[in-house]
Amino acid sequence: MASVLKSVLCVVLCALALFLCSSPADAQQDLALDCCLTVSHKSIPKHVLLTYRKQLKVDGCPRDAVVFTTRKGFHLCAPPAEEELWVKDAIKFLDTRLWKCKGNKFHEKRCHGLKNLSF
Image (cartoon, rainbow, N blue to C red; front, side):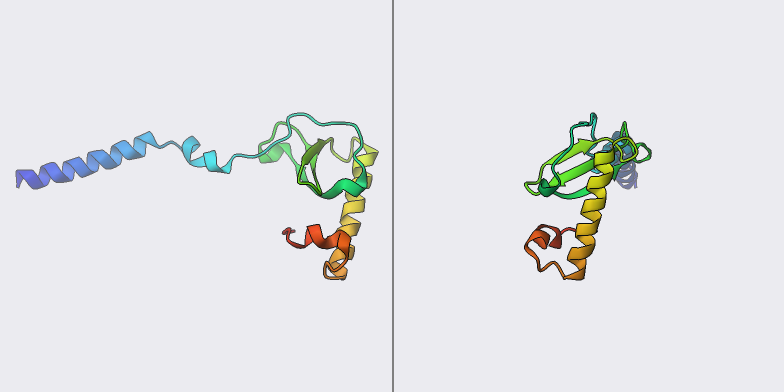
């Protein structure tokens, strides 16, 4: 009977140790965000851009930004569209391109890079 209690006590202590050693911060490490720390105010040529996403402070990043992805896969950080007219124009250009590509089912050459992206 004593050996059964020792085994149960050992299992409980091991489970408690495992629980105490893992913290919520460790569990969240896999969910780390890739954030822009700085932005460039220099305009980016529209023909090299593929898509964009908006980075927001409320999502855990230090600043609001627009992250453009180029056709070669580079991620370029720009200020929010409210701060720079060229960013607003680039977003409008990319949204229009995506709308047209969806309309022709991504058959045009300029749409091939967008085909496998999820929106």
